[in-house]
Length: 137
Image 1 (cartoon, rainbow, N blue to C red):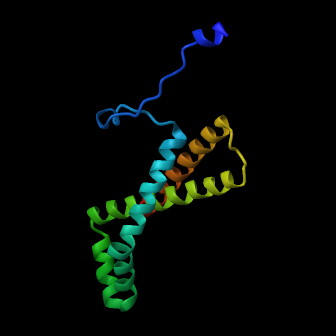
Image 2 (image 1 turned 90 degrees about the vertical axis):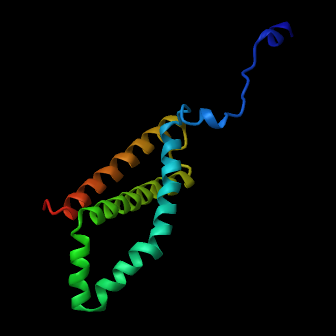
Image 3 (image 1 turned 180 degrees about the vertical axis):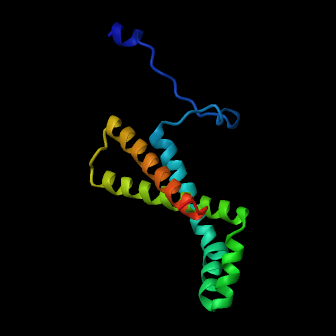
């Protein structure tokens, strides 16, 4: 009995708002937060940016040419690159979460590896589509 009483139990406390920037989430936690951020970004961009651009591009040939001119702006390309990242990240992380829902790779090591793979694939796909967007190929 004295052996169990002498052991110090860890104390878990809530972190303060000023400690949030110093708190380091594991890779799977960072993936989860970015999955939520990318989903919110895509949800908010759909009615404000994506649908109006799509509507203007299919209205007529003249409006399509106007949209080509607008999209050739570097600022618009950077915004579109951010939306491409959001979509690729949300897609890859979503597939990871579907696999986790099947109870595959739920142990700590596998979850960390799948989070790293999800980050890597989404960034690689973003780079490929970004290079295409900026006219490299």
